[in-house]
Length: 337
Image (cartoon, rainbow, N blue to C red):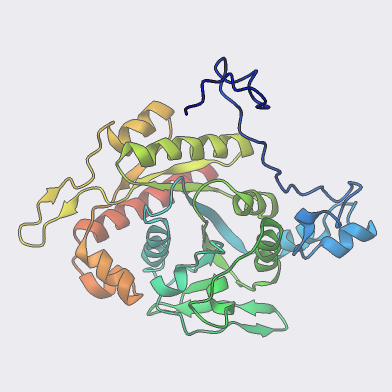
């Protein structure tokens, strides 16, 4: 027997057939804030490092860590967030190889902060999975990589007992770790700090925008397909809403470089015009396109810079990264001129 929307005794009989039944409302866990009645006591507060402080009423004033973080970042130059609307577009690979590209100049000091708490890929991409973070009187010391040791890296991956351990944390605990990274990591002096974020627009993004002072802008990574671009449009609108400047968009996996003839084949066809058209439509800069390139794949799997694989004559993906890095530097120099 099928339901005709007029079933005797059914609680929904009056609404069936005339209008769709609304799904039950999800009970969302929302931080009550430091001044609410349930501050530090609500279920959303479980695991938050500030729960005891909120429950005691001591957290109702300005967050004292904001001033501490601002002082910690006095010697940090350009601060760049790397975002993506969707996972799997190569955001962490672009973050890491962009950091390597900027650090090719031995006189340039670069930092790479991985705040993708549940999926920290940066230790693998830099070949530092077995490194441990040391704590000194100055704070947590990042891990240094590169031939000139001028690329400093920090990730939750260094703090896990095993590299295969899953991080199963609610939002407040993630936010607490991000704040601790910003407050306690001693970067010394940096020309650039690149922050690799998780996909989407969630707690981690709101926390980094709230706590990190004077962010210079965001680089958004996408692939050519419309399914990825649709989420990038949301990401751009997020940046506008929180007052985060958009440095530009990078189209990753933009064609495949044939290893035999160097011809580029479109694997993921830009059916709606790709990132370049989207950037023109939304009036944001297009930084460049990175093809699928075996050199970059090998470098990421080895945990090294593309320069160690490509040598002194970069083409394809490495050349695209150099051009993108130059575009980023030019954009930041114009904004501060």
